[in-house]
Image 1 (cartoon, helix red, strand yellow):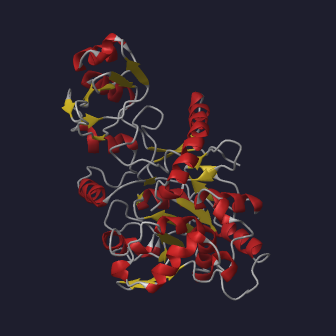
Image 2 (tube, rainbow, N blue to C red):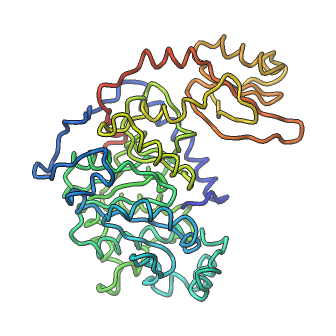
Image 3 (tube, rainbow, N blue to C red):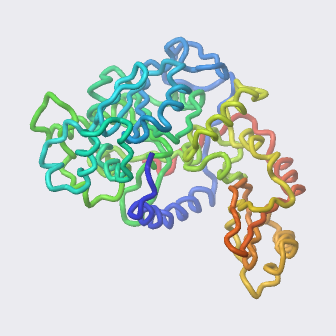
Amino acid sequence: MVRLTPTRLLCLAAASVGTTIFLYHAFAGERGFDVITEHSFASTRPSDPKVSFGEPCSPFKNSAMKDVTIVLKFGAAEVDGALPAYLERLSACKPNLLLFSDRKDKIQDYDIVDVLANLRPEYKYDNPDFDVYDRLQNEDRSSGKSADGWKLDKYKFLPMMEIAAHMRPQSQWFVFIELDTYVNWDNMYRFLTHFSPSQSHYFGSPIWPKKKTVFAHGGSGFVLSRGAMNRVVARGRMFAENQKDPGTHLFGKDVRRECCGDELLAKVLKECSVTIRGYWPMFNGEKPSTVRFNAEQWCEGILTMHHLNGGDFADMHRWEENRQQPKKPLTFEELFTYIESSLGSKVDDWSNMSEDVTLRRPNAATKSFEACFGACLRDSKCIQYEYSGDICRLGHVMRLGHKESPIGAQKWASGWVKDRIQAFKAAHSPCTGAHFVHPNPWH
């Protein structure tokens, strides 16, 4: 899991400006898409076994995903935390799975690979980031709870490329995820069958930092094809003194000066002539309660979501078991039913994350919750609102949000305009198949 460290927060803050520009340009005009239905989708592999979508462990049955390696990255402190429950959900389907961390270990029938173990000593010597690594190797699992473990995360990305390629030489696709990443495997299978793995593909949710390389956000999950992995491995030979062991070097990068491993990986991929093809919102950095539901993504297929905790995963699993048409590709339209019953006229101690219009004193909308509601009604785009004493915020998209406990005298309350929600649904539903949006960036 990527921690929101001060450095990470600064990087994401800088990237948010570029991301906002990206979203505007991506959707200000027409953005193409393919329509995927329950029964029909194009495939680059006509000999694929028939997949019974919507069933437990589909599409892992019939060896349909045998050429897809799932790479699960986490810290040593999470082996006794989130990992067991995540493995319980995923390992039941017997996927082609690799577990990568910063300490060698074993859980259930899986070996946990220390992707930093082969790094040459010069990368670790006199590097304060690796002080915690040395402690982790000398502690038993129960004591490996260092709060500094996040410092090692950015060092893992480059070695794990070589190690994954080395350990799975026959795999054609590599899906990189973390312990708070949700993946809809039916849709992921549908998606990957559109592409040839022999070509160099790098898919994910793009982050656009100003004047820097566009990269796929790690926590949202990203995908590399065998063609892309081969290019990375070939470039790595320029820096590897030991051709036998993978993951001995960092591709000539001073990782200490880098913000984030996912951004660093994109730089190396770009040097290999592999650039991201962005598939937001299908690769999504939000979880169901914080997803923005609007016209632009209403019919889009969902590949991944991020920031889910154990309770979120359990709730999603129960909801998925009760889908009315489980064979159909999961879309945001259908996911909206997951949160819809929680949208009320007034919910106290709650922030629905309205963020499109902010009204402050002395604006009359800040006088009361009812006045804030009135301001929403006067805004034809407003579909939800949030009141917190001296601030009224209006939202033009639908979001559930999160509990917000009072801070002193300041209290939060949120509301949704139900008749506008129903009007939105009437105008945009039903979706005729899932939209698999064309990439941005696409080159």
